[in-house]
Image 1 (cartoon, rainbow, N blue to C red):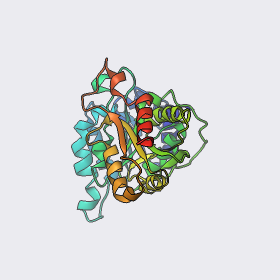
Image 2: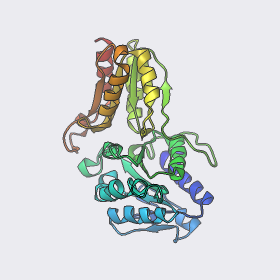
Image 3: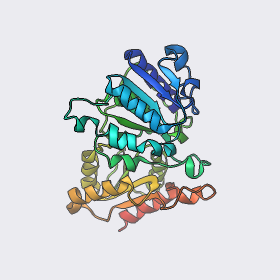
Image 4: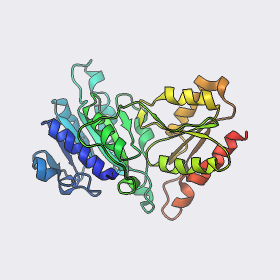
Length: 321
């Protein structure tokens, strides 16, 4: 099963097990531009799977209202780049709904799905990775899977979590990532990272589609005798600080990589916190390998993205410091 079919299956399980669950967004009734909702309208009916106007703030606002009434809302924003018109609804309404009512009301049944990241030809309006904007907002959980198994399990956990969740799907992996996905109903715990490959020389941290790049960088490092401990955070808010800090206290070195621009990117939060918690264990300054501080370029994408060679150089730099 590839990633988009895993997402589809996750929504199908959620809607089978929860009669209040609905899914909606631009072109969702037709299967969506990436086919993630294909077949759901035929199975669950047009009252539970339906299109919306081209209005992202309306999609988010409707989802908040439906969740506030006790329903399970699975909203789709067609591209992560288009989530910004809904930003006010998500950070000022969804994130604060429970807090401002003193826990009398909430909209925790809201999950907002959106595809993110580079795809090779998306340019500046179809390639962005906006995760850091949302990790700055208390009250919202932020999740990004690296493959089909996690996509289904994390999506089901997000839909059932008692807090609003922004669920970001690396669109480059929709058809590229293929795994044996368990049938039926299962969840992957939010807030827990995973050690993908153990190592003792340097800790390498990423999430989403960047893990595919980092696996290649770790392979290159292994070729010169460097053992990388590769960690997938899976959830960015809240992020699993324990798994990273325990690894860094063992390796003494840290490299964090993501596609989003380096300034204010989530790698900055990880590096800052690890510097506070593991300062006496560090053998080298932590290194960030990220996108550049420019709009996402079209013809220069290959120079912009933090590919395996840039990460390999960073790994060697911290090991040889």
